[in-house]
Amino acid sequence: LHPSGIDAVVAQMRPLMADPAAAERLSNVLRHKQELPNDADDETLDSLVAELLDVLPRPARPVAPVDFAALDALAGQRLRPAQRRFMRRFRQAAATAGSS
Image 1 (cartoon, rainbow, N blue to C red):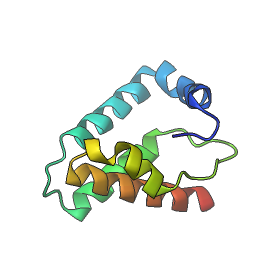
Image 2: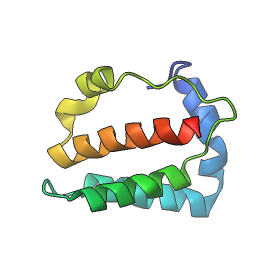
Image 3: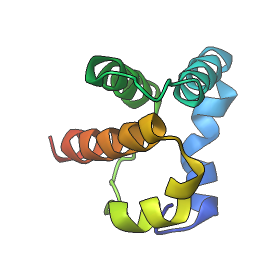
Image 4: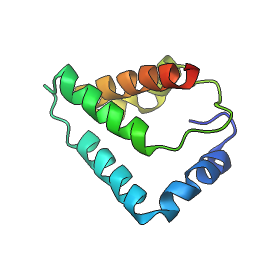
């Protein structure tokens, strides 16, 4: 979810997707997220969160984060427990990274 809509997401991701090495890194991180076992430990989740934060471009002017409860209500039912934990940890880490 992005407050400025999908066009803003596409614009923000365009440089990443134009870089084959970065696009492959993103693809690998997303594949690992999909493959998370339900019993994934916190260390595994935190490592994957760090990888995703490292590959995603940071906007010059960060937008306000989407409320996690709203995100969970929209997408949470499609995610396995470890994926939901990953999303929560990523959301928290991204908010912290954006404020530093």
